[in-house]
Each structure stands twice: as structure tokens, then as C-alpha cells.
Image 1: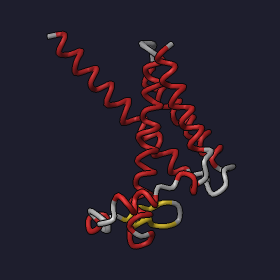
Image 2: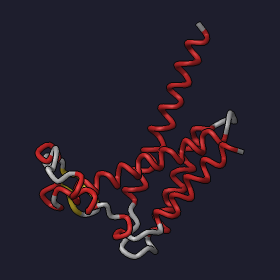
Image 3: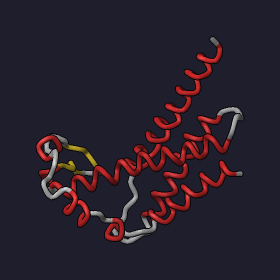
Image 4: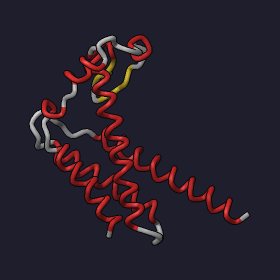
Length: 156
């Protein structure tokens, strides 16, 4: 039951955050305070990320909005990776745990993007679903790899 509680907690956090407007989620004032000296601006200026019908960059958005964009996308990747792990561990030792975790997370990501489309100032993004699913694949893949390594070491 505890394993399911972890998953439910992640899903509640997701539901709360996806129902917030962009303005409610914005961390620009905090970034402007914390990163006043614009660390790594030169290195970040090299990045140009295709997103929707535009290219997101320091040049296009400005330093603080670009850093916020990176943090938001990293949050997608990590958050959905955690959801996938929640499904993976809640599913237990049953067959196809990794497949269930990854496909379940992709389905949740699609539903989340659909839900976001009804939130003012937010839009639905297939690219975010891909990013979310990539987080699921990486997180579950790392756990499977670690489990395989430990299994081999115990067999010796």
C-alpha cells in the first residue's frame, strides 16, 4: 500500500501544478534575485532549442526566461520520471513492470497535457509528452540497469 501512496502523491502534485496558470508557476522574480550575476550566460547563449514553431534561446527570450524554460522542462523530465518509478514499484514484480510504467506514464502525460489546455495561459504540447515519456524511459531504465548489476554481483 505504501508503494501506491508514493504514486498517488506524485499524481496529486501533478494535478495541482497542471491546474496552475503560467503566472502562478512563474519563478522569474526568484531567478532574478538568485542569479543576478547571470552565471553561465555565455554557455547558455549557445543553446537554441526548437519548441513549437519557434527556437527558444537566451537571445530570443532573455536570460531569465530561458533559464526558467530550462527548469520547467527539467521539471517535466524528472517529475514524470518519478511518476514512472512510482508505477514501476507499485506494479511490483509482476511481468512487464517496465512497459506498464513507461506506457502508463505516457498516457498520464497525454491526459495532463489535455487537462492543461483548459487552464488559462497554458497550452497542450506533444513535445512535452515526448519529454515526459523520455523521463519515464530514462528513470525506469536506470533502475532496471542497477537491478541487473546487483543481480549479477549476487550471482558471483
